[in-house]
Amino acid sequence: MSEKPNYFVRTLIVLFVLALFSMAFLSFYLAEPKYQITTGIVTIIGFVVVLVLSESFNNLSLGKILSLSREVQKKEHEKEKVTSENKELRQELFKIVSNIQQSQVNNTYNAPSDEWLKLLGVVKAPESDAEEDQEEQKEAQRAMEYMAERQKARDESRARMELRRTAEIIGMEKYAKNLSISDSVIIQRAEFSQAFDEIDPIMHRRIIFDGYIKGAGQERFIDVRPKGSISPMYYDRLYVMLNKIYLYRQAKGISAELVLIMLDIEGEDNNRLWNIDKFYDYFQSAISNKLLKIESISVSTEEIGKYGSNSQQSLL
Figure 1 (spheres, rainbow, N blue to C red):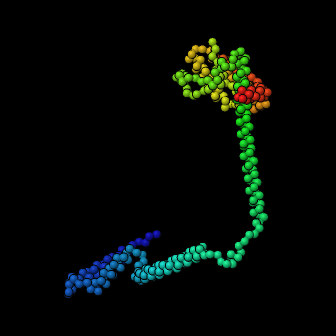
Figure 2 (spheres, rainbow, N blue to C red):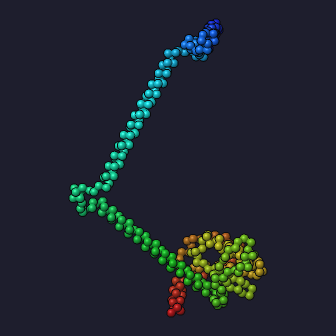
């Protein structure tokens, strides 16, 4: 609830202020000497100020104003005291840190005492150190065994590749024998000429065939693969070969096909990576259009061994 203003009191204050202001005016302009600010005028002006401010504040006390001034002076004095103490503390802290650093430097560069030198010698290592040495030896042994196993795996992979290479040559010779032709008629590692790039609208990819036979009315491109190496990853390469042969056949207007020779090498797991039924299902269209022909040829380890012996004798 706001208090209602008392206009009677305010009217008296205004009249009183005007009277005081008139007294100060007459004293300033009419008194002798004129235009002199006396103590009385300053006092009257002070009263006028207090009366005017009394309408702006609910509670105005000159004693509180003077008390506030003393508090400000007191706080300024305390601030100066605290600043001085902080400066002294920083100086002391800097001295302590400097002494500590100097002590560390001295401890670092000082030579060991005679008592410490007397303690130097050779002692038996604790059992824990011996166990660590054994663990290091075991770790080194395991690393050597791992390297030996990797080397053995590389040797086995290299030997398997050599065996398959020999089997591919034997398979090519057997296929030529089945056709009643000399294996010298087969052009090994054949590829299309650069002019073929102009008729392939999809991709310029170099494809090398294991063999190529050109007959009177039939051209055969040969790809020899062990059954164990035929996997879904090979399907993409086979698709590209069939596509290029198809474009070649369309461009020249001849009969051409891809002969896929599947080698059944004795001792290899041929059904590990692929499914024969799914393979035929995928490429049934190429087989029906006489674009793909599959030949299965068996190669025994005895034949591979004889081929290797004959090769060594021919080199000698």
